[in-house]
Amino acid sequence: MNIDLKAIRMQGALHGMRETRDADHLIVHSEQSLFAIVWAALENTPEKLAAPLGPKGPGKLVATGVAVDNAWVVDPKSQRVLLAREGEFDSIDPWGQVQPQKIKVPGLPVGTFAAAVDSDGLHVLVVVVRDINPDVSNYAIALADLTSGRLIREGTIGSGADLELLWDGHFGAWVIGDTSRGALWRWDGQRPAVKLAGPAGHVHSATFAATAEGVIVSVIAAKTAGETVLVIGHAERDRVVWADPATLTGSPVLMAWRDPARPLWACLAQAGAAQQIQFRDVGGKLLAEAAVRPGVHLANLQWSVFPNRVWGVGIRALAAVALSG
Image (cartoon, rainbow, N blue to C red; front, side, top):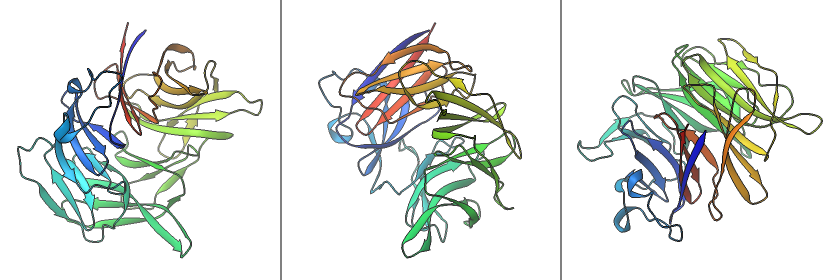
């Protein structure tokens, strides 16, 4: 397996990235704006330069006034950007061919921190803040029906850690994953959510992937002897079936993401100041790795909608990883 890794330093702080279904077309949240960019316009940026977006560089301005608590997502059906504002969603064609629209959702609060959309593009799940008392709050869940404008709040889910959202087409329900414990909830948007427990042991990180076989949970954990292990879980309707832990050798792995199409894991590893992107099989075996060049720091990876490609996002970095062989 061969890895071609290209990392670009960016002038502005990056807060997130999503793909459209057209090859190389990305929506990037940089500073207080969303931009539509083509990767080919960025990948030849010289290593010593930081790439700008907007008027001074590639990228079409999609939206302004976008804070880190304005959650947004790309509708897989219409390919429009759905951007949460107070009491509404902005529905935006990122390439400017169709005029923006506003979809009223009364009660949608100021401050949304993640979003996911179902396969029909009719419902958006968002992470919101729930106040417990004047000094304590946590993350909670709400569902926006874009056809009726109704906002449905889920009353039982709460977490102080980041929540990962996805639509599970296998069971036709939402999955809300706790990235700090590997636990998850299933919710159909009507009945109370069902919590599925995470694995035993000390969890470092957890990610969640929707596959043809259902949702796969990938947990990086520590055994009592100190070894780092990959624990893989298959989320059934009412429980998670956990495989035996697989010991990970090589540079310490921070997080692992499962390819939605096959049993292959992209991992972010770090030893000191040096980062590597690794690829491992279901048993944790290291298949290939590539070093991230000095001066570029990645915080997250995500598999592309196109085969054999992974995206990396850092606070001021964007990377593409292509696999071959």
